[in-house]
Length: 80
Image (cartoon, rainbow, N blue to C red; front, side, top):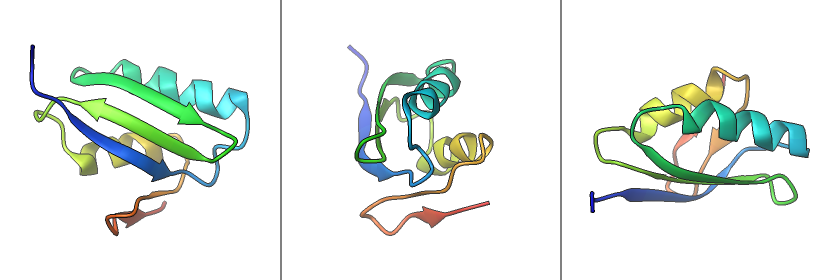
């Protein structure tokens, strides 16, 4: 089993409906190295499990490419 890392509760304020959540899940699950993603549009959060070959910054860039602002409790705050 490959080692994975998890970003819990990545805040995504623009994820406000099921369509937004599905779009983000679809975009990120196609990335080589993403093991799983959960999107909760009620709480506007994402939880991403990924292999160490990916970086948090790279994942954030992918989310931003869909025009979503993201931040997390570890002071990673980014926006377009």
